[in-house]
Length: 77
Ligand SMILES: [Zn+2]
Image (tube, rainbow, N blue to C red; front, side):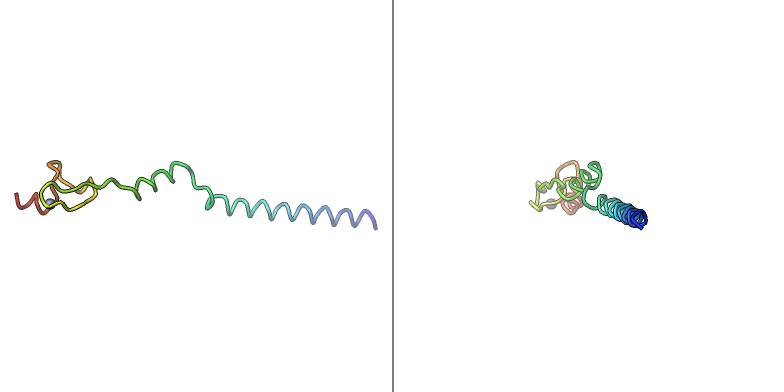
């Protein structure tokens, strides 16, 4: 009878450890994304802004023409 109890207790501990392990696997990717992916996300969020030299509108830097003008001023020129 005592041996049976130890066996049940052992199975219970094994089961709890297995459940905890599976939880950790499910949670960890959400809590700590890979550093490279997080860096890319920050770059997307904080894109450098630039001002059009002619009309003064603020646009993402890559949206301005090489001359420093926005699309509308570029077409008007
Ligand atoms: Zn402009």
